[in-house]
Image: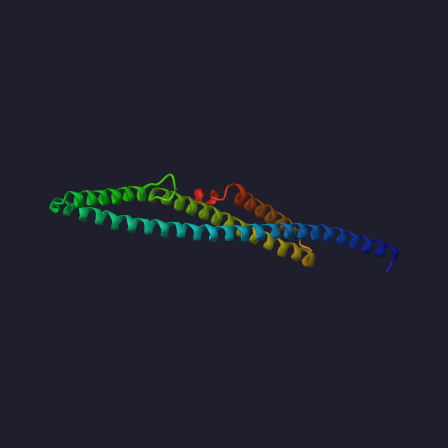
Amino acid sequence: MSAHENLEHAEHAEHASHSNKKIALLIAVLALFLAFSETLGKSSQTAAIADNIKASDTWNFFQAKTIRQSSLRTAAEALAAQLPAITNDEAKAAVTKQIETWRNTVTRYESDPKENDGRKELRAQAEHLEHERDTWLARYHQYEFASAAFQIGIVLASAQVITGILAMGWLSGLLGLCGLGFMALGLWAPHALQLAGH
């Protein structure tokens, strides 16, 4: 080999080494953002499950209140129907008081702003928890899309090192930007793609 060929070979090796360093840096950056999107996705999934359990518990409490309310309303109406047949004034007063107590309880079961556990308040709480759950799930899906983009980007960048095809590196970078876009949607506008689909 001549000195000129040796110099050309060294320059080519140096250029390849410099190019590989850029790809290695791209892979490292993509892996970093992959770790962020995976962590955010896992925490969103956990929060969605927690809110789903809370919403289910709240709806169960709502149903229990509804059953108790219906039972008391039925008992009050049955006792009220018997009231005209009672002739003893003391007994009539006691029955009237019991009917009034049950009717007040029925009203309190419908709405109890003080304790915040009437049917009206429980429904609002459960619906709020369902909305929060849906938001966490939407975030989770955005982070999953971001993770997929970062993973494919890492594969393409690795393939460029092996094949030397420059387009794979560019495509890898574009996928990294897509992943960042999905992460941004997950953080600030998790329902954006759902709204666009409607």
